[in-house]
Image 1 (spheres, rainbow, N blue to C red):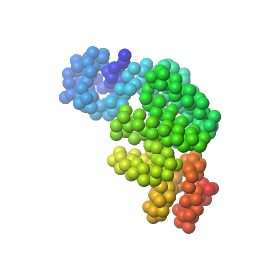
Image 2 (cartoon, rainbow, N blue to C red):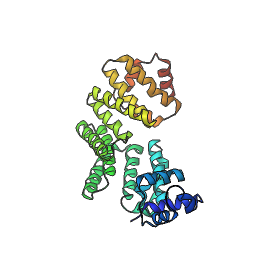
Image 3 (cartoon, one colour):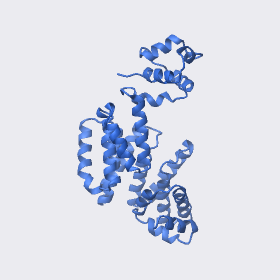
Image 4 (cartoon, rainbow, N blue to C red):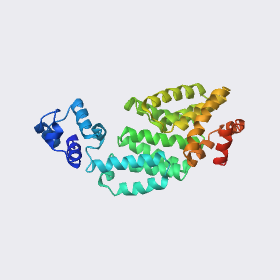
Length: 304
């Protein structure tokens, strides 16, 4: 089993810091030696001090300590995440090919990242929603039997949500979205899983539970404000403005529509808009607000 000392030692050596200098005003040089050998474990407070000394958040490395190449795995995971967020499927496929050649990604739990991202490409990149349902249902069953990581299971439910929506099975779609959301809320309190929260909002919206969409959206926006996070915020605004629009709260709907459009005018994201156009009511709402200059320019830019 790996230990955090491996991460500390490599980071310290890469930065050219001696144990003596590294331990100064924190602990003894000998204690750092024991930590790096795995014979001692730093307290949370000491780990925070060591993180500050290195300029690296060591807490983020705990999930990688059993990897043969923890730094390489962490870097690859970050790259995969960025490609998914940007819906850059070509880059995602290239990164997956690289990951498949890494030893750690051939073993559990990291092999599940390969499965998940391949499924992600198939569903969202190739748009094989209905065709992927049998594969996803089989993968989910096997993952549960194998006691796979809950994050992987939640992500499979999240993809299943999209497939069920396209297939027209609203009941299974809502069940998938809420199951994924509840798994992650229980497992990681305080964390924001943007895509899964957007799925829950979409499920509420399709079921015409507009007050639930608005309530969840406002809660998420407050958290995002505190964390200075903007990932998928355009989707949060989208389902909120559509819900206000369906409730005939026109002023609130338009204010949020402007915010939705603002992000998409700054950053050209045709794939995002393609999915937004698929949401019931979005195109009609745009046409109803078509006299607005920003809405008109948005529709021209994306050829809606």
